[in-house]
Image (cartoon, rainbow, N blue to C red):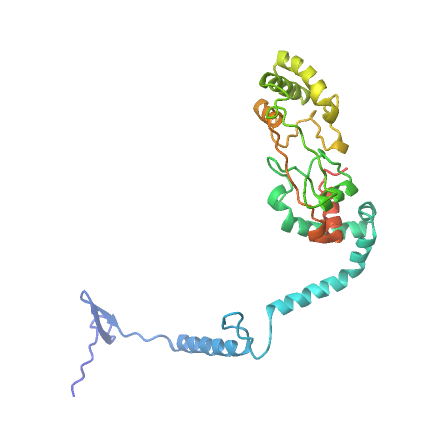
Length: 290
C-alpha cells in the first residue's frame, strides 16, 4: 500500500491531514519531557485526592486517608498561642485598665491584641486609621464627649452609647429645637452663628450677638457657658474646630433643629471583658487619649 502521508515541502514535517482555509497543521508531537511532566501531575492529583480532603459532598467533603484538616491545624495554632499568653490574659482580667496601661509589658500586649480586635469590630465605623468620618468620631484627637481616660474609654466600649440593650449605656439626647418648635428658624440661625463664633469661625456679628442670648437660655446648661462641653451629660465641646456632624452654618442649624443621635453598640457582651480592656488600651494609645 502506498504511503499516503503528506510531508510539508517547506519544513519537511508530516502534516496531520487537517486543513483550515488552505492552512495545514503540522504533526509536531509534544516534547517527551513535557508529556512525562503532564503525566506526573495527573498521578500526583490522584494521590492527593486519596490522601487529603478533596471531593465536595452535600454537607462536607471526603476526609482523605491522612485525616488532615486545615481547620484542625488552625485550632491547634490558636490553642498554642492562647497557652503561651494565658498568664498575660489572666493578668489583664484581674487588672484595671489604668493598671494595664501603666504596666509596659501588659500595655504592649494589650495594644497588639486591641489592634487586631479594632480591625475586626471597629473599622467599619471609625475607619482603618481610627480617623472616623461624618457622624463617627475621630479617635486620634482630644475631643472626647464621654472622656478619654483609659477607664472612661473602657466604659464606653463596654456599654456603648444610646444602646438600648444595655441599661448602663451612655445616654444623652439633644432636644430638637426646631422640630419641637422650641426655637424659630431665626433663633436657630442666630445661635448657629454664635456657635461658629465660639469655635473661631467667621460668623455674622449681629446674628452672633443675638445668638448669645439664645445660647445662654437654651444651650449653656449642657454645653457650658463658653462652649466647653459637659462630659457628665455627654454634651460635646463647641469651642473648637472639631465637628461630628459638620461646622458650617447650615450644618449647625440642621443639628440644632433636628439633631442626629448616633448609636454605638455595647461590646461587653459580645467581646468580653478582656477584649474590651485591650481595645480601650489600644484606642488610648492612638494619641488622642488623656
